[in-house]
Image (cartoon, rainbow, N blue to C red; front, side, top):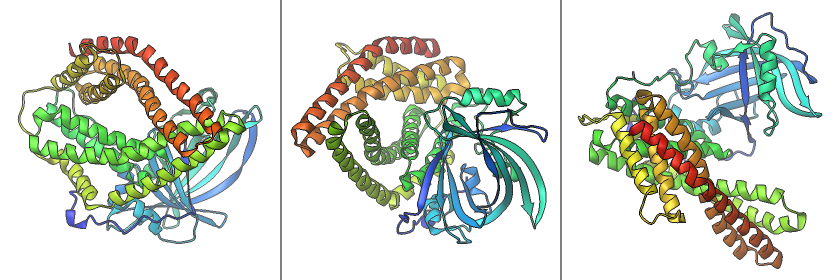
Length: 497
């Protein structure tokens, strides 16, 4: 990655809050098909044939593509729109701005500043896509759109490459028919797709993550450098979505990357220059706390909206007002987040993260197994703490140490192999249970705030019901913990001894 020039890291005054910007989470699966493939008979309605002409923009060095981000100007039947696709775990966040400008809009340039900086955004490929297919229905409700794209890559007005691919896009997030549909399409002749977006195929690029792990016998320091670079890029890839503030998962993944970087710096401290590692961890802690304020509100908003949907109308009314109160808090938190993400402190942190894989590392004979074992030992001690009765404070401490042990295991996994993978998988399960327990505690805090905000008798009744639910959630989580923690320790003993 190109070395960041600290003097050039100056963000624009604001990220434009444009009401015409819309966003959707794109959940799709791609399959490869040849020229002879035909869709099998599926229940639903045909999708009329469409012609989509997309011009993709990037820097000359393809900085966006390397970050798994695409920016395009799309034309369909005279309608023009700018579309930005951002990584989102296994999905992608598609952000659209309808306008007729012929240059990338300032709104998107603001979001992409850390990737583009002062570089020009240039057209790098034009794709012409004929799309047709079927909208699949189950019980008269649309669940997926199955389409075949005939793609032509255009240069200087002439077609220089063409290919076909099949897309299954989920249109109902609650539907679980995708595996059955995939099996039908495979029986009809569809095969594995290489996972690359259309732009990558057009430019003959490898996938968005071309940075493989070091060889299993590589020195531990090589893994540390690789992991710092990998998670640093993951944080940077989710910066635009966190700035936009329309999809909670973007901010969540940015926060996860922050935690993973801190855990790596902690676990690998014997391999690092202490002053350098400690100061970088301090800055990541600051960023984690900043992101955590907004993330906690996202979690509670999702929970209370779900609770509200299950209530009777008379009980929902006071809760609706409280949800509006939380949304106002979340909006205020987003303003504060954007202010800090434009600060010199944040920009300097990004510079340091980009330089981290190349910064000096001390000599040490410690192995990745040693590092992971050290974090597992701390977790084991927390679980076996004298007088341990799974009280809230102890559970929270176990939750923190489980995360650290898991991240250290992930660092060592390429070298340790299956024992590490089994430990990681078990740690994920217990993390989910510990997370539910913590979320229930936080929810009760917000419920009490709701009661202060809404003082009616109906609000008190609703609050009492919800507090009781939180206590049941905690009790249920605790009932699972003992067995899961015992199983986790067994996996850890097999992996680390």
